[in-house]
Image (cartoon, rainbow, N blue to C red):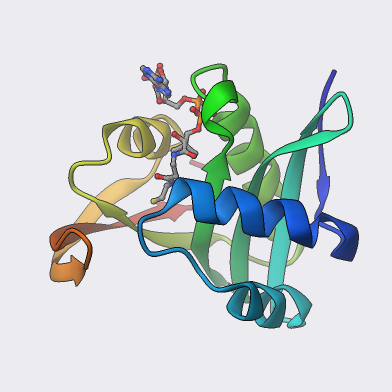
Length: 147
Ligand SMILES: CC(C)(COP(=O)(O)OP(=O)(O)OC[C@H]1O[C@@H](n2cnc3c(N)ncnc32)[C@H](O)[C@@H]1OP(=O)(O)O)[C@@H](O)C(=O)NCCC(=O)NCCS
């Protein structure tokens, strides 16, 4: 069974592992911990039969938020978990006054871009050389609440 809930301190070890598996320049354990305990962030987790298979985080600066990270275990991708996680995060963000959400995504990250398009994010701008390893531009995208 798949469930979504607010991330807990006990999840941190699994989230760090997933972060390291998912990104070429992952956040350090220390950065993740520091962000997680801040009062102006919200992190959520996806669990399948009790096992953490995804996580996502949002900064909360009402009415604006930034999607800081989202990742799903590679073995579980393509089954709607990312979409469920994003929907859960956005609806929890709305409860905390977040109507407009921004994000950056690698131009080549087709799966993530499909996820964001389907969730109503719109292209705003290109951020030149935003990423390293490999160097790549980012698309800046924005979703306005209720859309
Ligand atoms: C982006 C990510 C979170 C999506 O998670 P997911 O659970 O696979 O998402 P979903 O199953 O909801 O699918 C999202 C879209 O990607 C497509 N997709 C995902 N995995 C796929 C795969 N292996 N093959 C083909 N399409 C795939 C889905 O078809 C869907 O598009 P659609 O709505 O047009 O059908 C996941 O791919 C991931 O963790 N990637 C690595 C980390 C990352 O890049 N994060 C984003 C940083 S900006």
